[in-house]
Image 1 (tube, rainbow, N blue to C red):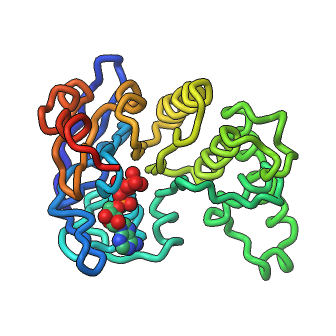
Image 2 (spheres, rainbow, N blue to C red; image 1 turned 45 degrees about the horizontal axis):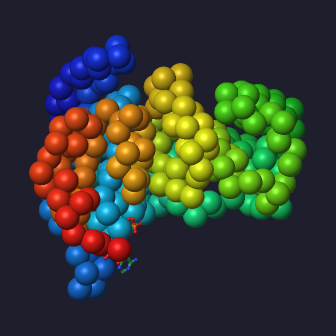
Amino acid sequence: MKDMTEGYTTADGRRIGPVLMEMKNITLRFGGVKAITDISFDIREGEIRAIIGPNGAGKSSMLNVISGFYVPQEGEVWFKGYRRGPMRPYQVARLGISRTFQNIALFDGMSVLDNIMTGRLTLMKSGLLNQALWWGRAEREETEHREKVEKIIDFLEIQAIRKTPVGRLPYGLKKRVELARALAAEPKLLLLDEPMAGMNVEEKEDMSRFILDVNDEFGTTIVLIEHDMGVVMDLSDRVVVMDYGKKIGDGTPDEVRSNPDVINAYLGVAHD
Ligand SMILES: Nc1ncnc2c1ncn2[C@@H]1O[C@H](COP(=O)(O)OP(=O)(O)OP(=O)(O)O)[C@@H](O)[C@H]1O
């Protein structure tokens, strides 16, 4: 068991706790391509931590290492003071990690409510046999799950569309439903893959507000990756900046903004 030092209080009075997750010297290769080279950083409890960088910098790869989907060839991932080995998706969910995807991954033909319910699957204790033998208990459990989901629906202000099939919703609302589904798993650590991509200004403002509210209301630690540096600066407590698979900056938004390597990566060389 590793010693975890205390946290700190932010300028706006939010409490950031001790280290929840630590990435140590992570290197990830796809054949001959090095997507991540020797990157280390930590994520503290209750913080909003952004990973930014130009196209192909390695952000998605890093998010997939954090989520346990990719196992790096080198380096160590520590979570809640323990070194984490390779895991199956359900084990990741049980650790309290859930995520949204860059390309929305919802069931188009199902209602908003049912989509969000799928987020609770890993928390459901009653399997089919249990439901047959203990009908009353399974029913009580179902009611509890529905109540939790209704709370999330209220919180994210999507009551009006709860019965609507997801396929009929505009893009910004689909993203919000995906956030709702991830929240339904009651995650300790929420991973957001480009939550604002493809959104108009108003939708981006709404999403920013909801991300801040989730962090504030549930104390959820949030890691988000974004392409757009401007969007994350107001949201994040600390930012990791990647470029060509390497970490070129790590610190508060102000520290990162004034880092010459970061300025060069964004303004100097064309990556697209
Ligand atoms: N599954 C894969 N197989 C082979 N190469 C990959 C794979 N995933 C990523 N890469 C390569 O790893 C590097 C980093 O890609 P990654 O998608 O992590 O970057 P990114 O910062 O998320 O980019 P973007 O902003 O465009 O989404 C790129 O060179 C990419 O081509």
